[in-house]
Length: 112
Length: 116
Image 1: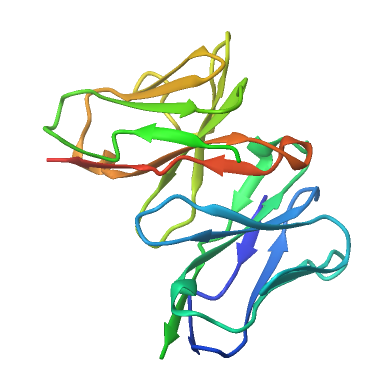
Image 2: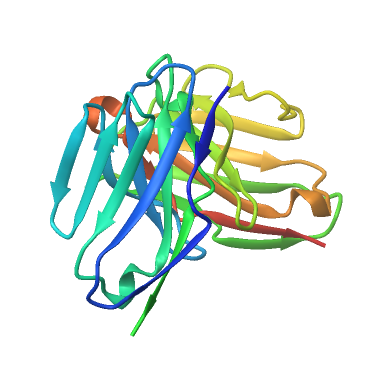
Protein backbone atom coordinates (compact mmCIF):
# COMPACT_ATOMS: atom_id res chain seq x y z
CA UNK A 1 0.00 0.00 0.00
CA UNK A 2 0.88 3.66 -0.15
CA UNK A 3 1.10 5.97 2.85
CA UNK A 4 2.28 9.55 2.78
CA UNK A 5 2.39 11.78 5.85
CA UNK A 6 2.90 15.50 6.02
CA UNK A 7 1.79 18.10 8.58
CA UNK A 8 -1.69 19.47 8.07
CA UNK A 9 -0.85 23.09 8.66
CA UNK A 10 2.15 25.31 9.34
CA UNK A 11 2.56 29.01 10.02
CA UNK A 12 5.61 31.11 9.19
CA UNK A 13 6.61 34.75 9.00
CA UNK A 14 7.26 36.76 5.85
CA UNK A 15 10.98 36.82 5.06
CA UNK A 16 11.71 33.75 7.15
CA UNK A 17 12.50 30.12 6.23
CA UNK A 18 10.16 27.15 6.59
CA UNK A 19 10.71 23.42 6.14
CA UNK A 20 7.81 21.13 5.26
CA UNK A 21 8.48 17.47 5.95
CA UNK A 22 7.08 14.43 4.20
CA UNK A 23 7.49 10.77 5.14
CA UNK A 24 6.34 7.92 3.00
CA UNK A 25 5.93 4.16 2.85
CA UNK A 26 5.19 2.98 -0.66
CA UNK A 27 5.32 -0.09 -2.86
CA UNK A 28 8.41 0.67 -4.90
CA UNK A 29 9.89 4.10 -5.45
CA UNK A 30 10.45 5.97 -8.68
CA UNK A 31 10.64 9.55 -7.47
CA UNK A 32 9.13 12.16 -5.19
CA UNK A 33 7.40 15.35 -6.27
CA UNK A 34 6.39 18.55 -4.56
CA UNK A 35 3.48 20.57 -5.92
CA UNK A 36 2.09 23.93 -4.83
CA UNK A 37 -1.67 24.43 -4.79
CA UNK A 38 -3.37 27.73 -4.09
CA UNK A 39 -6.93 27.53 -2.81
CA UNK A 40 -9.38 26.57 -5.54
CA UNK A 41 -6.66 26.21 -8.15
CA UNK A 42 -4.81 23.35 -9.77
CA UNK A 43 -1.47 22.16 -8.38
CA UNK A 44 1.70 23.43 -10.04
CA UNK A 45 4.96 21.50 -10.19
CA UNK A 46 7.75 22.61 -7.87
CA UNK A 47 10.37 19.87 -7.71
CA UNK A 48 11.27 16.27 -8.44
CA UNK A 49 13.77 14.11 -6.53
CA UNK A 50 14.73 10.59 -7.49
CA UNK A 51 18.24 10.42 -5.96
CA UNK A 52 19.28 11.21 -2.39
CA UNK A 53 20.33 14.74 -1.72
CA UNK A 54 19.28 18.33 -2.11
CA UNK A 55 17.84 19.92 -5.25
CA UNK A 56 17.89 23.71 -5.20
CA UNK A 57 15.75 25.89 -7.40
CA UNK A 58 15.73 29.55 -6.48
CA UNK A 59 14.00 30.12 -3.14
CA UNK A 60 12.78 26.53 -3.05
CA UNK A 61 14.87 23.44 -2.27
CA UNK A 62 13.82 19.82 -1.90
CA UNK A 63 15.68 17.06 -0.09
CA UNK A 64 15.30 13.29 -0.33
CA UNK A 65 16.53 10.37 1.75
CA UNK A 66 15.32 7.13 0.22
CA UNK A 67 16.64 4.96 3.04
CA UNK A 68 14.60 6.95 5.55
CA UNK A 69 11.54 7.41 3.36
CA UNK A 70 11.83 11.12 4.01
CA UNK A 71 11.75 14.35 2.09
CA UNK A 72 11.46 18.01 2.90
CA UNK A 73 10.64 21.15 0.99
CA UNK A 74 12.54 24.23 2.14
CA UNK A 75 11.19 27.67 1.33
CA UNK A 76 13.45 30.68 1.89
CA UNK A 77 12.74 34.42 1.99
CA UNK A 78 9.06 33.71 2.41
CA UNK A 79 6.59 35.95 0.60
CA UNK A 80 2.88 36.38 1.23
CA UNK A 81 2.15 34.73 -2.11
CA UNK A 82 3.75 31.54 -0.77
CA UNK A 83 0.61 30.98 1.31
CA UNK A 84 -0.74 27.79 -0.26
CA UNK A 85 -0.97 24.06 0.21
CA UNK A 86 2.15 22.04 -0.55
CA UNK A 87 1.56 18.50 -1.77
CA UNK A 88 4.08 15.72 -1.44
CA UNK A 89 3.58 12.98 -4.04
CA UNK A 90 5.42 9.72 -4.50
CA UNK A 91 5.72 7.73 -7.69
CA UNK A 92 5.54 4.07 -6.78
CA UNK A 93 6.29 0.91 -8.68
CA UNK A 94 5.64 0.82 -12.39
CA UNK A 95 7.00 4.28 -12.94
CA UNK A 96 4.01 5.61 -14.84
CA UNK A 97 2.27 8.73 -13.62
CA UNK A 98 -0.78 6.61 -12.77
CA UNK A 99 1.32 5.29 -9.91
CA UNK A 100 1.53 8.74 -8.30
CA UNK A 101 0.15 8.96 -4.75
CA UNK A 102 -0.47 12.35 -3.20
CA UNK A 103 -0.31 13.30 0.46
CA UNK A 104 -3.09 15.41 1.94
CA UNK A 105 -1.02 18.53 1.64
CA UNK A 106 0.40 21.01 4.14
CA UNK A 107 -1.45 24.29 4.37
CA UNK A 108 1.19 26.99 4.82
CA UNK A 109 0.09 30.32 6.28
CA UNK A 110 2.45 33.27 5.91
CA UNK A 111 2.04 36.06 8.42
CA UNK A 112 3.36 39.63 7.97
CA UNK B 1 5.36 25.78 -21.31
CA UNK B 2 2.82 23.00 -21.26
CA UNK B 3 -0.74 24.20 -20.74
CA UNK B 4 -3.81 22.13 -19.93
CA UNK B 5 -7.15 23.85 -20.27
CA UNK B 6 -10.14 22.56 -18.30
CA UNK B 7 -13.73 23.68 -18.70
CA UNK B 8 -16.05 24.53 -17.01
CA UNK B 9 -14.33 25.89 -13.92
CA UNK B 10 -17.54 25.81 -11.92
CA UNK B 11 -20.82 24.02 -12.49
CA UNK B 12 -23.96 23.67 -10.43
CA UNK B 13 -26.49 21.06 -11.42
CA UNK B 14 -29.58 19.34 -10.11
CA UNK B 15 -29.45 15.85 -8.74
CA UNK B 16 -30.00 13.26 -11.45
CA UNK B 17 -28.57 15.29 -14.31
CA UNK B 18 -25.30 14.69 -16.16
CA UNK B 19 -22.34 17.03 -16.35
CA UNK B 20 -19.49 16.99 -18.87
CA UNK B 21 -16.03 18.33 -18.08
CA UNK B 22 -13.50 18.91 -20.85
CA UNK B 23 -9.73 18.77 -20.59
CA UNK B 24 -7.53 19.96 -23.45
CA UNK B 25 -3.77 20.00 -23.90
CA UNK B 26 -3.13 23.26 -25.71
CA UNK B 27 0.43 23.07 -26.95
CA UNK B 28 1.30 19.41 -26.81
CA UNK B 29 -0.24 16.03 -27.54
CA UNK B 30 -1.34 13.86 -24.67
CA UNK B 31 -1.97 10.19 -25.36
CA UNK B 32 -2.69 9.80 -21.68
CA UNK B 33 -4.57 12.07 -19.30
CA UNK B 34 -5.41 11.56 -15.65
CA UNK B 35 -8.59 12.51 -13.85
CA UNK B 36 -8.41 13.28 -10.13
CA UNK B 37 -10.99 14.14 -7.53
CA UNK B 38 -10.23 16.24 -4.49
CA UNK B 39 -12.51 16.66 -1.49
CA UNK B 40 -11.91 19.59 0.90
CA UNK B 41 -8.67 19.25 2.85
CA UNK B 42 -8.04 15.86 1.28
CA UNK B 43 -5.43 14.64 -1.14
CA UNK B 44 -5.84 14.29 -4.86
CA UNK B 45 -7.29 10.86 -5.58
CA UNK B 46 -6.76 9.35 -8.99
CA UNK B 47 -10.08 8.29 -10.50
CA UNK B 48 -9.04 7.04 -13.90
CA UNK B 49 -6.45 7.12 -16.64
CA UNK B 50 -7.75 8.29 -19.99
CA UNK B 51 -6.09 6.69 -23.01
CA UNK B 52 -6.40 8.08 -26.52
CA UNK B 53 -8.01 5.56 -28.82
CA UNK B 54 -8.79 2.99 -26.15
CA UNK B 55 -10.82 2.47 -23.01
CA UNK B 56 -10.05 4.34 -19.84
CA UNK B 57 -8.52 2.54 -16.89
CA UNK B 58 -10.46 3.09 -13.68
CA UNK B 59 -9.11 2.94 -10.14
CA UNK B 60 -10.62 0.55 -7.68
CA UNK B 61 -13.90 1.81 -6.30
CA UNK B 62 -14.61 4.23 -9.15
CA UNK B 63 -17.76 3.34 -11.11
CA UNK B 64 -16.98 3.38 -14.81
CA UNK B 65 -20.67 3.62 -15.75
CA UNK B 66 -21.08 6.70 -13.59
CA UNK B 67 -17.89 8.50 -14.60
CA UNK B 68 -17.70 8.19 -18.36
CA UNK B 69 -14.37 9.06 -19.92
CA UNK B 70 -13.78 9.68 -23.60
CA UNK B 71 -10.34 10.46 -25.02
CA UNK B 72 -11.44 11.44 -28.51
CA UNK B 73 -8.20 12.93 -29.76
CA UNK B 74 -4.59 13.54 -28.77
CA UNK B 75 -5.58 16.85 -27.21
CA UNK B 76 -9.01 16.24 -25.67
CA UNK B 77 -10.35 14.09 -22.87
CA UNK B 78 -13.82 14.44 -21.36
CA UNK B 79 -15.26 13.27 -18.06
CA UNK B 80 -19.05 12.94 -17.81
CA UNK B 81 -20.59 12.55 -14.38
CA UNK B 82 -23.85 10.76 -15.07
CA UNK B 83 -26.90 10.94 -12.83
CA UNK B 84 -25.06 13.21 -10.45
CA UNK B 85 -25.85 13.11 -6.73
CA UNK B 86 -24.87 15.53 -3.95
CA UNK B 87 -22.09 13.19 -2.82
CA UNK B 88 -20.48 13.69 -6.25
CA UNK B 89 -19.90 17.35 -5.38
CA UNK B 90 -16.14 17.79 -5.48
CA UNK B 91 -13.20 19.41 -7.23
CA UNK B 92 -12.32 17.46 -10.38
CA UNK B 93 -8.88 18.02 -11.88
CA UNK B 94 -7.39 16.64 -15.07
CA UNK B 95 -3.72 16.39 -15.82
CA UNK B 96 -1.36 15.26 -18.52
CA UNK B 97 2.22 14.05 -18.19
CA UNK B 98 4.86 16.28 -19.69
CA UNK B 99 8.62 16.36 -19.27
CA UNK B 100 11.09 14.57 -16.96
CA UNK B 101 10.39 11.19 -18.48
CA UNK B 102 6.73 12.16 -18.78
CA UNK B 103 6.14 11.80 -15.05
CA UNK B 104 5.81 15.49 -14.27
CA UNK B 105 2.13 16.36 -14.43
CA UNK B 106 0.65 19.54 -15.83
CA UNK B 107 -2.73 20.12 -14.24
CA UNK B 108 -5.82 21.81 -15.55
CA UNK B 109 -7.36 24.56 -13.43
CA UNK B 110 -9.96 22.19 -12.06
CA UNK B 111 -13.75 22.06 -12.14
CA UNK B 112 -15.80 22.68 -9.01
CA UNK B 113 -18.96 20.58 -9.23
CA UNK B 114 -21.87 21.27 -6.91
CA UNK B 115 -24.85 18.95 -7.13
CA UNK B 116 -28.00 20.26 -5.48
